[in-house]
Amino acid sequence: MDARDCDAASEPGPPPCSSVTSWWAMVLRNLRHTVPSYRVEEAKGKCRCWYEASLSDGNPIIIYLHGSGINRAFCGRIKLTQVLSDGGFHVLSVDYRGFGDSTGTTTEEGLTTDIICVYEWTKARSGRTPVCLWGHSLGTGVATNAARVLEAKGCPVDAIILEAPFTNIWAATINFPLVKIYWKLPGCLRTFVDALKEEKIVFPNDENVKFLSSPLLILHGEDDRTVPLEFGKQLYEIARSAYRNKERVKMVVFPPGFHHDCLFKSPMLLSTVRDFLSEQWA
Image 1 (tube, rainbow, N blue to C red):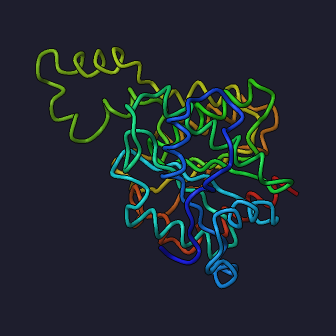
Image 2 (tube, rainbow, N blue to C red):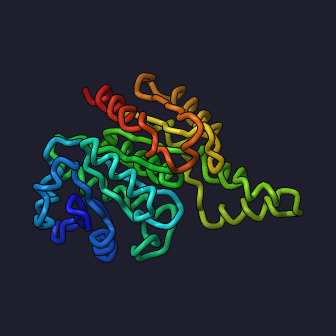
């Protein structure tokens, strides 16, 4: 484990939301805290409680919600975490239930519940330090689901960053390049849609953003072939139309070369994020 990293505190008590003990035990195993890189030396040898207390040090906090592949330890996700740490951010990386070492069955409702609890747990320990939800691909659906629930509870998320977002999972799945090959097969498209309906999988970013007021930054690569740029643009227009304060919604398109999951390689990523958050949190 890198000196800048630590698992969640071992005895934090239950999160301030309705959840079962087994869920909290799972979070303790699968919530990785990476401190800002300038605190790495200070963090060496420190206990988990030190990491928890560090969340209130004034450095902004990002809760990172990964996409549908593998887990939080995927190479590109670790590199993004390092970039954000070098930029002065705390990063809390989460493996949803059913991912990585996390137990449980993966459902949209379950993933949403997990992140609401993580956000509330973090806010309870962050003092005046702002907390941002950052979702990538599938994680964008989890982020807006959680943000919509928190908004309804009167606790808007401090900021939301959506990297390579879709409008909703149905549209994203139907337009996935490999799936398009099977469109002409009799009943294939209906089978896909019926399966999503049966499992109650929607992740409706396009509906969720209509109910949000949090600062919203959309990041998308021009040459993203997994979730094409058009989805990000559509979501931006929907959010822009719905928000009363238009200045709270921004979209940045990255030039070719970064595809679906390599924005961490862009030299403009960190400055884009820092400038947006600084402006919104001023």
